[in-house]
Image (cartoon, rainbow, N blue to C red; front, top):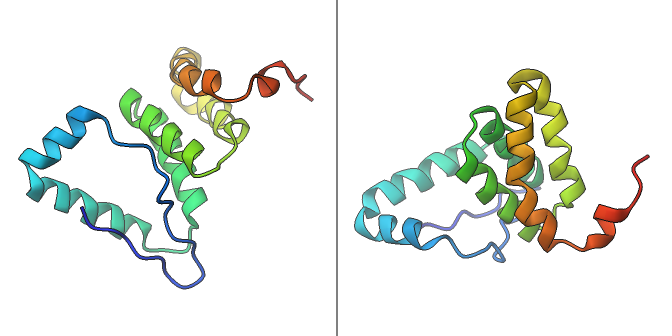
Length: 129
């Protein structure tokens, strides 16, 4: 798949992204034309004033709004790998709750559980202010 180059004033995408799941790797190996088209869509979407961190958070929030569990989980894994604090990712849930409703927000919250468990427990036990 094509690598995107950073534009002036924007940081390059992280090379520390987690390895894509096996079904995804198999799919793009079988359908390389779709993989190239998907890369082109992502590159076109990145063309604009938003920095990579903001783009990642917006994509996660959009995935939550569309109730796309796989996209939420993937986006969270990538965001954590890129150094976005889990606390900032978690804030997306109450932000989208008014739009998607409480039951859907709870579902989105549950999709963050694996990442919350993999991050230091010090955050989970710290009192909220």
